[in-house]
Length: 241
Image (tube, rainbow, N blue to C red):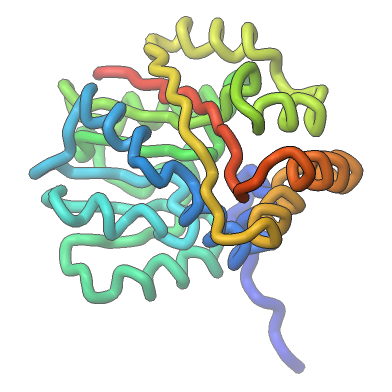
């Protein structure tokens, strides 16, 4: 009798995209922010050269090699075991990178061990993430910075799509008030998705939006745009500890 494969850690917040559509999410990662505007914004607040970096909710480890180019030590934490395995495979030749299975609200890291935290579309969506923020208080050293990258549903092309697809999501004002109360500043960034083909764009939209919304916006965007690109607004929320 075959044994059931281990699942995500209890208490993990399910991801509707990368957990179930891992290869397509890789395509999305490659298409997002081709001009590096998010990285530039982050560096303007706190560079990670020579630092200890935590990529929280690292998924398949897509961003770990990037951090490893200049950071002294990089740790990825991810609750899903299959994604942990992919992240470890991706970074197996990088001696100063390690990947752990763990939760934002119970980080497998020592106190005062991290200089820079990067959390991109992972767990930290506004109200409800307080246990994870308490863990950041514990693991980030004085002078360190935490970055949380999330959608800005008020701008760009994808923003209105997101609002239509998830009308019950926290309002932008609620999210902004939450982060301000937690001591975070906001750096808005207007970047883009840039795909090789409309089929690639459509496949990503289908894992990000409910089916009826995805079908409509794909058809409209295909008619209106000569290139497979989407204006994509994000907020880089950051706090210095």
